[in-house]
Image (cartoon, rainbow, N blue to C red; front, side, top):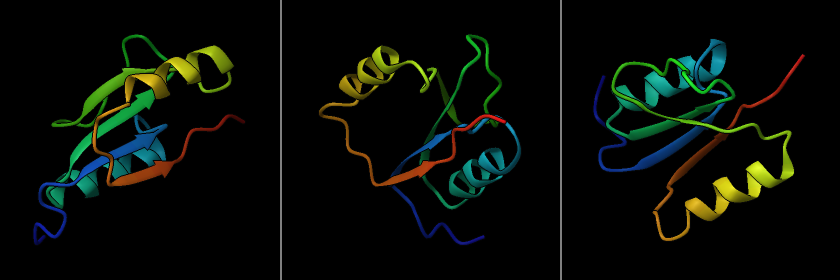
Length: 84
């Protein structure tokens, strides 16, 4: 796969399983620096991706997470977090 996204920063919420994981892997393979989120403190991100635990159903946790992104460039956002 060509590195069409070389140098871009991506965030994939809910990126440890299923569709989110597949998207994170494709972005990584395309040259992105990828951060994935999940709710587990010991989440298992795809190889080569960063991980941050955050529960987006918790308003305060979401605000704290967003504040932590200030000043960091974010080129791609995939909002995949959800529950059944």
